Image (cartoon, rainbow, N blue to C red; front, top):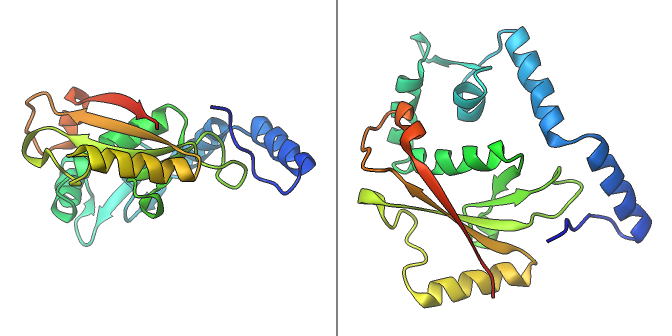
Length: 190
């Protein structure tokens, strides 16, 4: 599926495409990463910048910088399914997709090929998992769930992308176990 560029007329859409191709998101992320590393940036909360890109240090309220283990336990205490969602999110980011919340489309995420101000999202993403949280979001258990979700996403010109996170019998609650997780991707259309 080709990107659907934003704009009122053909010229505006062509300009949006030219601008996006001139400044790809991967280049912007690299520039952000290098500037954050260079200035030893510290922040309160940002898992992707801290764990994946290694360019942000997270400070606890009174303990100083937190390591990956402490940060993982904190995030898991806030959302039980955090590690599965993080694995899915980081996979999409590694593929240079721009990941945004997808609740208004009945999805966990929506993904854009280029900057969201330039192009509409192409996929609505649902994250599913094995193990104790098998139905971590309670969706796609019966055929009518699949039908409703694909119909909703189809009405806004998006494809359903299901990311199935397999923990591979690794029940460790640490972010260090993320390397052992695998993700299976499936697209579902009407």
